Length: 317
Image 1 (cartoon, one colour):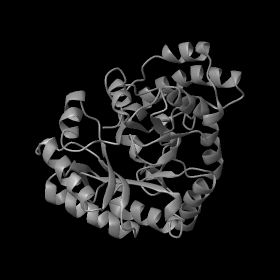
Image 2 (cartoon, helix red, strand yellow):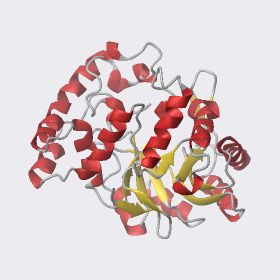
Image 3 (cartoon, rainbow, N blue to C red):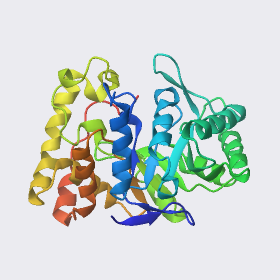
Image 4 (cartoon, one colour):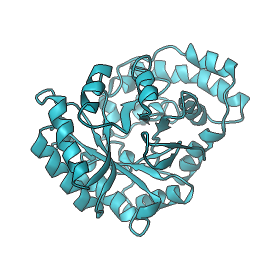
């Protein structure tokens, strides 16, 4: 797998990471067999995936515990990414929690759940509208100076907010939902990231399954699948959005690839600083996703994908 660097002086990571959220959170039923989830993470590391992303808010910390178990004895092989700034209630509803003390507590709780003495990359998951960004960022910078965190990552912010945060402490990464279906911020945030040598961690790179061709109707979602509440998966919207993926499938056919591989190849084509974080719950799709690094899109492919109509429904709410 091709590699890149997190930030200006950070560790070398594969161009494709692993987003672990779906192993235990939101995408029902998830992997109810914990041993299979642990094995899948270890298999990803065996295949060269060394950037693993989780969060304290995923399944009330259970996702971090799972990752901690998976990397036990292999800590040196993994660039561990987690984050805070969000709290979930019993119903899974997330709210910002960017106060300095809340973030200090979140870091300590993540270290405990992951069974590690430091976190390689800690993401501020959301800007808390009730707390100045510089205060939240400053609290996390203190954790870097204390040796609990190596590097910091920003959430979706404006370029000016990024500059204000970096006046306090440099950012090694920015995390955002980016895919062929979600291109918000590419015109301003991406150039800033390139200029500052900040890695762009692309979450939901497969449109939460839509771009992979994994779904065709709303009814295919499990009754407790969180996507049932999202506008892009409403019955009328999902029919429209599935139709859009035909153009992706046509490009994939030219390369004897899958739509998921083309969607990931398109993101990789944006620049060496872009690191997609596809999630999966099967070995088959893990191998499929990694195959996206081998697809080389032509100019004609890029033109066809560039004119892909915008999907119906807003991205994650």
